[in-house]
Length: 277
Image 1 (tube, helix red, strand yellow):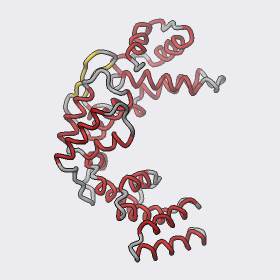
Image 2 (image 1 turned 120 degrees about the vertical axis):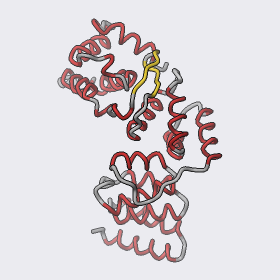
Image 3 (image 1 turned 60 degrees about the vertical axis):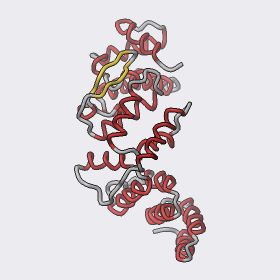
Image 4 (image 1 turned 60 degrees about the horizontal axis):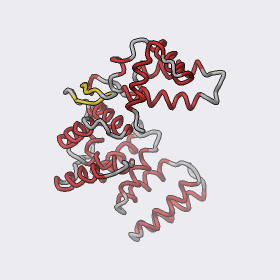
């Protein structure tokens, strides 16, 4: 149950909504939410954001809900938010994950807008999260083709490359996708590939580093950060390059400390040569 102050603000918000004063209602609910989490407030605020054509804020709000899938009312609002934002790609990912059709129909933006989104993305010197989210408004064919073209760019932004791979995996794409990995073109099948953080190789290397630095916690964040860069550079082909996680972890730590990567020296040198400067 919400506090008395929250209830009062919710009542004021309802009165504002009835008067079509959506901005006033939103301000009341935002203030109420600052007093503490309340799912009813989140749901009402998300709906108001949608009514007020603030779909991006509704998306950010609803994605922060811990019961996104387990609470039916929250999940349905999430689907409405996807529809409001035309996030077809995320909707298709959900359908692949759940194995069922969503209760709300989600459509992409029109063809001209899709072309504009792709052209603008190419022109951006730096890609923000908002820029990337615009790609979720494409239809499946355009998203797959554009994703393929981005993955064939050897100079592609590290974070964008990783996000594209994982989006293709969530879509369950079952065809070969071409990609550059440390300066070499290779292929992977998204449907047969795990997300980076769910990969046993990734988990074992990170756990090994955490174990090696359990008595030196001040250095651990830096080492984990470097490991994420290195493993992300090899993704989605981790198993092609790392056959023994214990040996790789030991050699990786040695490389960072002394520049001696032992049996993985050439691999580690190649990874760092291909990292963005």
